[in-house]
Structures are given as C-alpha cells and as structure tokens.
Length: 424
Ligand code: URA
Image (cartoon, rainbow, N blue to C red; front, top):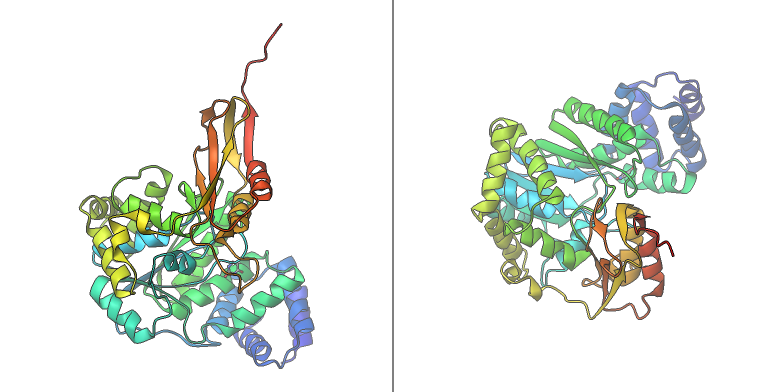
C-alpha cells in the first residue's frame, strides 16, 4: 500500500478497502504519513465524500487508535450533542434516565470557542471534581446511575491529530469526516445505548436541516454497524436552548427544570431525548417513555439523582435547593429595545461569542473562566416587545467594559420594527 494510490483513489471517487483505511489512519497517527499527504486525502474526502462502508471503516480505525472503555456495568447509555449554545441537556437527561433505572455514563469536554462544555458547567458547582479515576466513575455510576467526568486515558489519538489538521486545512465541513470524528469518540466510550442530538442553525456545525438529517442518518448507521442501539435526533439551534447561557447560569436552569419549574422548548427536548434513551433500553414505547421521563421530574426523583451525583463528586449539593449558592455575578447590563419590535430569531454563534467575551468561555485553552458570567434571554422568537423592554441581560464579574459584548449581543438579535409610523 502507498499513500499516493490512496489519495488518487479518493480523488477519483474509487472506494478504499477497510485495510487501506486502517493503514492510512494508523500510519498518520504513528507519524509515518506526513501532514501534507494526509491533508491532500482529507481534501479529496471533502470534495468527493466517502461511502457508508468507508465511513464506518474510518470510524472504527480511529476508535481503535487508542483505549476503548470497558466499564463493569451491564447496560450504560451515552448521549452526544453536536454542539449548541446554552445546551445543558446532559445535566437534565442524565438524572432523568438514571431515575428510570438506566445508567448514564458520560465523558465530556471543556468549552472552546462559541459553544460551552459540560465539564466547565459542572465545575461551576463549588467542589465538583470532574477528573475522577475510572474506579471512582464506576462507583458513582453504581450508586446513583449518573456521572460525567472529563476524558481520561488515551481515547482516539487519531481523532485528536486529524481534527487539528482539519482545522488548519479547511477540511472540517465534511459529513463523513464529522461523523467519523464524533462517532469514533463515542464508540471508544463503548456505551450500549447511544442517543445523538444533531443540531442545525446559526449556532451549529450544520447550517441547514437537510445537512443535519444527512449527518444524523450516517451517524445512526455507523453506530448500528458497530453493534450499538443508536438513535439520532435532529433539533434546531435557531435560538439558545433555554434562557440561560454560561456555566453557573446553566446549572441553575437545569436544577430549576428538575425542580419542575420550567416548561417550553428545553423541557420538551429533554423529555424527547430521555425518552429515546429509555426506549432503546427497552423501557416501553416512545409515548410510555415520555411519561416515565415526565414522572421522574414531577416525583422529584431526577433531582435526587443529581443531588447524590453532585455529592459523590465532592460538590455542594445544597445548590439543588438553593441555586443562589452558585457563583453570582457582580455586574449586569441590560440590552433593551429602542423601538416596538417582533423578535424574528437569534444568531446563536454571536450569542456564544458574547458569553465568551463576558468571561464564560475561553479563546485559548488555558484561559481562566468567570463561572458567574453569561447571558439570560428575556424574550424568545415570535415575541412582540415594546420600546424599553429588556431583550437580554448580560452578566459578568470580570468584564469592566460591557460596550463590545453589548454590541455583539445586539447584532445577534434578528428583529422587525413593528412600531406604527406617526403621521403628522
Ligand atoms: N465535533 C467533533 O468532535 N468533530 C467534528 O468533526 C465536528 C464536531
């Protein structure tokens, strides 16, 4: 085998064999194939795509480039979202599904760029440890049925290297490459049940519903071919998920939802995703599983799972009763309407960047976070608001000048002036 033949085959849309793909991935991971040749192959994939069989072979080869987790628990479920703004669903779905008797084991990442990361969000709870050993992870899962930790061991080193190269060579936006990158990591986590939330819209990788459906279908096929019970759901990211964006603010909203205080889009999506997981676990029909998920909230059982999980991770579980114990911002800035208007939509990527500038996210890997920072949305798509009504509130403890984040926040609002003209 040689790399020139492999590049040429993909360039001419000829299918590669499983062995050729394994050779390519392992050669690149070991450093035998240089960046410039791998970049050429990645660009050929961007332009010509891969067959479903090639995508599966690429995913499996990337999974097998590092550790594959083997927990001593008979049935575990995992969930993945393809990146969203204000997406705190893992903190809500995990406790719901665990309260219904299915173990949810997740490894998550930190936020980088405009989307947040669940590990940062959890670390806004005072004392909460995310860097647990696998033995502790397993212990908590057996006790409460739900735990999230930061990545341990060497999962998918091939993806780490290939993703960095894709970022530097304009080869990120390819559905088979995105599928292989996400699914290799999920398959290395090795849960039996996998629910994937594929997002589309302004704050997501996939800008249109059609693209998101293509990615979802491919991910489902790859998961199923790997022997997992797998379901991919497509959801929009035209507005943030829930009202709060930012670490402590997102924990607050998750707790309030589990306290039964929140309805609407966030609640509906959490019930849908939890029900998909429960159905794959054999807990009943989709409708029956929706009811189980709703009951887990209304009975308070899901909140109790979250409380026990926080406690076993060393965190202050009193936040489950009193969210004012979460980090509180010192400063706030209200964005108000200057005219009567209808809210048409939001640029979620801009909202994510605003939150980052307020201190909630990081531009560089080692930036320190302001856990109290973020945004609370005071209105939603379709709302008619009056002049001087608050559109959103920006919070920070570190931002001394709100002018730049305020401008970005304003740019993120798509609206139509509805004020009647005055005739004089
Ligand atoms: N997230 C990933 O992990 N990989 C991609 O390629 C895109 C999003």
